[in-house]
Image (cartoon, helix red, strand yellow):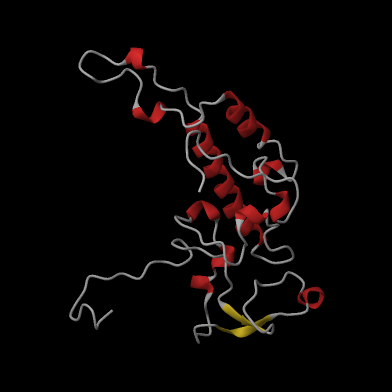
Length: 189
């Protein structure tokens, strides 16, 4: 960066447990690559080492696997796995609660988007004389075909832990994911 824009800057290092949260372990592991802290190291076959990945002795300030998902602004699903893989989080580790919380929030955002896309269409007859309308832009429907609307609701009936997966998964793994319906009228490539 200094080669592109040398000189003083007003930079600020963001808390990686809040911005781009990955629920990762700040400590090194006896496993060949970083893992979440196991609840039972003997059963899991690896354990945390007594030093941090960044060389410090105390890294509790960057223990993202224990960060409450409610405090997170953006998430990166590297360790927790991708939501469309209906990931079980990281069972047997301290990161499980954080991963499931982040996954649940992702499915909640999907639900919000679908609900927004299900809002009724604007009727051209409801446009006022001045060109404005009595229904806000946010009420334009993206799902207007009856069959699509039915399929959106069908894809919310998954049986895998509905309080976390919000009805979008039937089983763990990508084959258990109930794919999102694209908006009506989009051309498929």
